[in-house]
Amino acid sequence: MAITDDQVATLRAQLAGQDEEHVNRLNQLDTEAAKNNYVTLVTGAFFEAVDRKFVVNGEVAEDAEVINFIAHQREIHPDSADALDPHAAEMVILDALGKGSMESLDGETIFGTQILLLAALVGEARFSGDELDAFLAKARTEADKQLR
Image: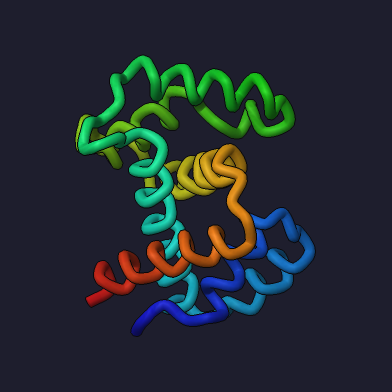
């Protein structure tokens, strides 16, 4: 089953800060397959956002840059700082960069951390509407590959 337009629209609403729209759309993902595909889409978007932030000209950022990014996000978003465990965040990003492992984290922690970091990465990128759509199209393509 491929990623659907509804799943992309759900993630777009969240990343665009349309909280009510996001919740409404999220509640419509009512099958296990739809929920699993949404998780796959979020993961694809997360990996794309991490690459855009931490890989420049094929060079992967140093661990210190990842740590500083996480600390900065926790500092500027005090309301979600408690929800973003810095150790888990570091593990999730480093794993996405091929520099670490998330073996000690459970699926719920991984997904929760990815979604918080994805929002931070997209927020920092300050995408226009068209740029956000292009970003999500790329994430959708990557997620569809994972579902094959």
